[in-house]
Image 1 (cartoon, one colour):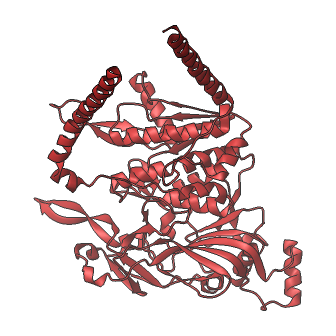
Image 2: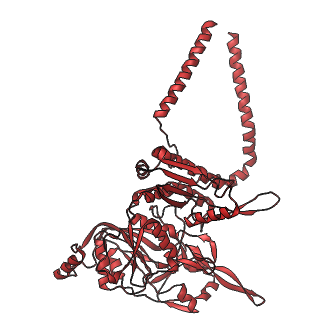
Image 3: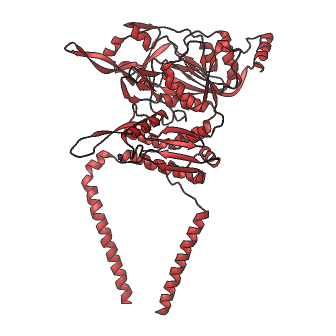
Length: 567
């Protein structure tokens, strides 16, 4: 009996010693295994490199603490898990906390704090909550976002995806899939000592003013933004990491195109937003009917040489935005309703390119289709396209407000996936190859201090056949609104801003961080119909099986105990 007690004591001491040893080893050797099929907890190499290279502490404040519905609690849990992965790699230089915005503040301080969050880009979400079973629903304003602090700089990010035109479950799933990119991209921007210089092109009556305020503000938050009047410069400096053409209205001369061409040949990136036809909301509002004609920008040859052609047509799509129209009268007061307007297509992101991966629909106005040109060393990737129910109308196109009152015939919308935004990558050939004399080439070299080039190294540009994609609506009450928001239904927010910033990020060599956008989380939802049909069966299984397992364990234990004492 004494020997048995001694053996038990020795075993207990051995077990305790092993546990202590394992805990000591765990302090110095720490590893984790990601057993998920989509590797949702595995950070991309670029993110790991970013976090290992931190030279200051990153402090992240997440505003997802509170009594929220299950979907928001899931987003909060996924955010915490992602930030824990960040801390695993970045160590003590990554700190985070979850806060309830405005908690403990009086009404005026809470309002001021919420206003400051909105100014930093964290947009509120109006959520309906049921406070009491007897009192219906009430509205609650939440801010599903985070503030990222690095050194003396702060950047706000939205953790909830845009809500326009997408299933709420898929929206929340995409929001979770983008968490790594959202935080990694914010840290990347805050770490930059010198922001990339982006040129906003002028000289051809490009958009400039309140109608593009949100686009300009968004670009200024991530880049050094400067204007370039093309006619006033001898060449486009290569100091500019990228240039943006925002809906030019006037014809480009050959001299203008030569400046653009040599900028591209020397590695410059271009983001084109071009309207091929002269039509817009302002022209349609001034006339009962309006005929959209060719704008004659004289860009066909240079874009064709680079790999695309913007067609002289307008896309109509059954997947479209809505505009108000008089549908009747009550007494002498007109009654308005929002009706679909097929000339305002809601563009779908295509493929798995990181620019548009997990992105919501993009709002466009009077977009044209794009053809890609075969041949050459240029790869063409369609980023945005029409839906499966669309069609085109060749110029001249007659437009009328009465079109809103006519219900579209679905049988006429048989075209699909018409390209509206295309990424071009490869070695571009100069439009002026074999067209300039030796003296002209020498003059160009003197002006630009670079020899005339007939072909570029590997380069990239993006062509979008809708200049209005950059615009924002202007409310008479609140002034300029966010890009991609319907003036008459502000609850619909589309991904125009996200597309703009992703495109610039990809062009300005932020492609490594954008690798994280390729993550895709799989929705593994239960079949609601099967649950309904087999509800009683599963309830019985959940109640009876645990009881049977306990009884079985009791019988086995009793049998073993009886055999032991029989010996």
